[in-house]
Image (tube, rainbow, N blue to C red; front, top):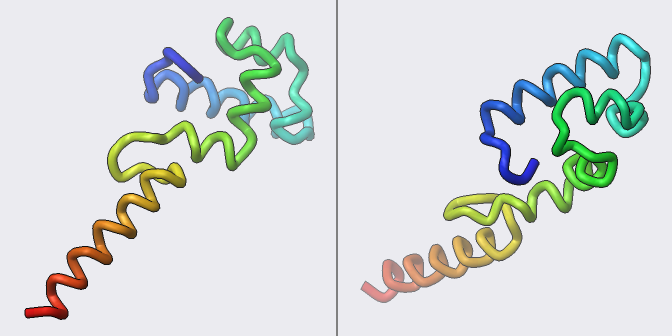
Length: 88
């Protein structure tokens, strides 16, 4: 959830997981009023984006994060370091 600290977002998601279990539905099937009650920033669109594994991973652009660009950078860096080790 954009603009929400991780700790708070984690708490919100935990509550939503409990709601989904209680209702016997998947997270994607939670009613929009429950999403909004959990956090006003959590629109149905935002929830669907957060529950999309690819979109969720791509949001983690920080150094060492799982976004494709960061993983590609880490692989290239490792290849360069490995090349340096092999040539010594």
